[in-house]
Image 1 (cartoon, rainbow, N blue to C red):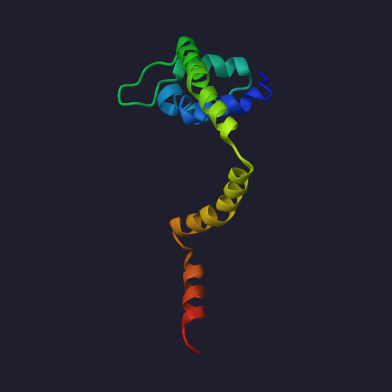
Image 2 (cartoon, helix red, strand yellow):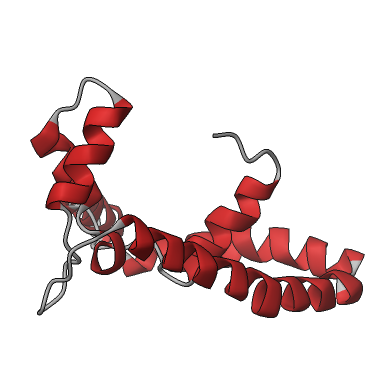
Length: 133
């Protein structure tokens, strides 16, 4: 299936509202590795025979479960995402775009480096660069 330009919106909303997480559709990557299907039909049959939600009390995944998730995705896009984006688009300025690029490149990169555990060699080089003589 091809979704064209709609795929970006579908992907954004699906991730934002966590509709393709293991607690909703099962541990899909683990399942497909376990199945090792040769055809899409084999995978589809195996998935619906073996997929359960990854929660404390697992629920069997059925085609109807996926249909309901699709309905929820549609509701989120039409009732939340589109109105929020329309408001954002109408308020977006050139200054917002320039500030965003600057912030992403300078501030977030700098902040991201310090959130990560520093590599031991980096710490050694930092120590050596600051030690006298």
